[in-house]
Structure formats: C-alpha cells, structure tokens
Amino acid sequence: MEQLRTISCGIESLDKLLGGFRTPSTILIAGTAGVGKTILSLQMLSEAARGGEKTLYIPITTEKEHKLKMYHSTLDFFDGSFQVHAINRQLSEKDPLTTLIDIGNVIESVKPDRLVIDPITPLGFGFVEQERRRFFYTLDSILQERDMLTLLVGELVREELHRSVVSHLSDGIIYLSRADTDARADHHLEFIKMRGIDPGKRSEITACKYIYDITSSGFTVYPRLKPEEDFRLDDSRVEAGIPGLDGMLGGGMIKYSSTLVAGRPGTGKKIFGLQFIHQGLQNGEPGLIITFEDSPHQLLMDAKRMGWDLMPYMETGLLRFICTNPGNMYPAEHSIRIKNNIEKTGAIRVFFEGINSLEMSIPDHLKLRSYLHSLTSYLKSKNITSLFTTDTTSCDCPGDEMIDFAYLMDSVVVLHSSTVNSRMYMNVTKSRGTKHKNAVKEYSITEEGIKLRTDTLLI
Image 1 (cartoon, rainbow, N blue to C red):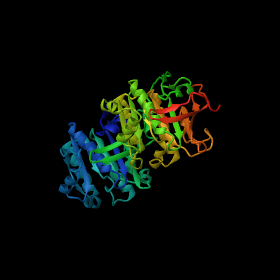
Image 2 (cartoon, rainbow, N blue to C red):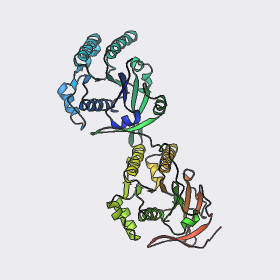
Image 3 (cartoon, one colour):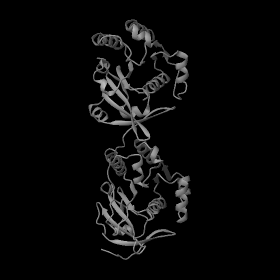
Image 4 (tube, rainbow, N blue to C red):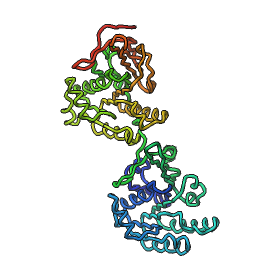
C-alpha cells in the first residue's frame, strides 16, 4: 500500500506549524488579489528546486515570460532553475480543452515532484457549471496520475470556497486574506482544510488565524505563543531588588510569578523595573527588557544615573532589549521575538515596560487580554520572573486605583503619589500563592533607586 510522505513546505515557519506537507496531495492556495498567493507558491517552488526536486511552474497569464522573470528576480529567495511553461490566459478561457491537453503533456514530459498552477480559477471559465465541474474532474485525474505535490493558486474570496469544485478536489486549503485596521493592514492565513496530518494537530491549526508578513526575503507566518509542554514550576523565591519589598511579598517574588507595577507617570515604575533587572544581573541572572517608548541607549543612561552600569551586561549578552514602535507592531511577531530572545539568552528575568502602550497596536480589549495571557502563560512555563508596568489615573487613596489586567498577574504593586503632601506610597494589593502584607509604606526615589521606609504607615 502506497504511503503518504512528509516533505518540507519550503517555508520554515509553515513547517513548524504543519510539520510539512503530505505528498502526493493537492493544496489550494486561495485568496483575493494582492495577498501574496503567488509569492507563497514561488517560494515553496524555489526552495524545492534548491533542494533537488523536479519543479514545474505553469502560470496562466497575459504577461510575457521575460516580464514575469523581471518581477520574480526582485525576490531574494527566487530560484529560476525550475521549469516554466506559461499558458496564455485568454486562450485558456476560449479553449479550455486544448489547455487541459497542454497541461497533461507538459506534466508527462517534465515528471515534476512539485507543480504550481497559478491561477487555476480562469480554467474552464467559459463552461456552464456542469461542464466546468467535469473539466476539473478530468484535470484532477491527470494530477492524480503523478506522485507529486500540486499547489493550485485560486483567485477566490472566502464565500466562494464552499461552491468551488477545486476546493472539494483539494486535500488542503490555505486561505490568505487582508484586514484593514485604521492605518495598518494585517494579513491573515487560515488552514481551512488539511488532510493527512495528525487529527489532534489538525483541529488545533484549523481553529486559528495566523498573522503573516511578506518581504523581499519571503513569506513568514507567525505562530501563536504557547506555554512549554510538560513544564514544572519552581516556587523558590527571588530578590525583587528593592529593599523592604521582599518582606511585603512574604519573602520575595516567587520565581515563576508575574508582577504588575501600576502607578501614575512620575511614580518610578521604570526605575522599579530597572532595579529589578539590575538585581538579577548582579546575581548572574540573564535579563530581557521590552519597551515601546525608550531606546536601549536611553534606558542605559537612566540606569547609570542610579549607579547601575548595565552596559557590560549588554556587551556580554547577559542583557538584551526589544524596542518596538507600538503603532507598527504585529502582536504575534512581537511575542515570537520575545520567545526567540529568551531562548538565545536563557533569560531568567523579564521587564516589560508600559503594557498600556499595547493599546496602540491592539485596540481590541479582548485581543489585548489574549496577547497578555499567552505571554504571561509562556513566561510562567519557562519559570521566568516577569515584571510589567502600566499607567493608572490619579486617585485620592492608595489602593483605590482602577488597574486594567491586574487579574492576569500573580502580584500587583501600586505606586501612589499623594497630591496632599507630595509623598509617595507603595502597597501590595495582590500576591497569589503567598501571604503578603496588606500595608501601605512610604517610599522615595533616591540617587540609588527606590527605597522604602521600614515603618508601616497604614494597615
């Protein structure tokens, strides 16, 4: 009995999601104009040719072959070694039967391991529906005679997929779309159907939309950030880096915990985070700082004013930065950058400055909640101690602040600047898994960082 083989998609990020394509099979790559269907199929074909496969590209086009080559040569990944057999689009619509014979003859001549027909939808255009279906059944019979992977590019909107005979004849359907959100366009990839892969994985991938990006280097799909599998939590304690705070937290931060530091601008949230990272670096713990407003140089200068020289740690790779403009950020790409940096450095502490800045790139509250939930879950599965900061509105009494996303965090520390006496107060309003002191303490920002008074002001 002939067995399905697994081969590379030709795109690393797709291979990570799917585990590769099953062959022989037919995959439909569908979507409207401008979403990257041709680039996706050409990259798959180029990588296959580079890997030694026999490859054939059949464009259904009105363009001259030399013009197609000029367009394709602008793509960094393009490998022009695959065979090209162009078919005039107007002739294919007028005389589809001759086109069908032409396709069969060139496939028999080349005997490809991987074939792309781009696009498939103009074929049989002049037929009535019953004849058109018969036409595609015949084409499918021709394709099935060869032991190959066939990629069919279809100019289809999502609503047309269930009516298209090509969809029913395909073993897999990859659908590409574009969604305009304010000043930015997001591209989404969906696996509508994918036969031949593990049923558990199939149900997982077909339930999601994946963000993708296209550059001259090729096509990149960003998978969703997920917690590590079979992880064990380490409930040991780590030093917060702020004298007196460890006592308020019942002996220090739990190693895998996430802490949200909330307060108005000017209450020292950034200094709090830098102090937390500096403490870890002094203990030999690699750190990662994620910011949206400041450059690494700015943060290094801010830390140096407090007497913390972080440059040597950056030079040795013990400290890394991720600085992003939130208006141009793809959340899925951002989370993968965080994951990759953590894996490269072995980061034990993460300081995420200003989660309220995420509202610029993720205005939908539920999507923002989903992003933060996936990130904190991943960090916890890696036993990473994380600290997030967010702005709050002013209030008269410490602890009465309205704090978004506090429910996602293990601990919440509120920094309060009094408008009455110009003093600053700190209290721990939440500390999951430990008996924290529900007390308000005065603190000050000194040349050496944040310092707490040792006496309790309010209980």
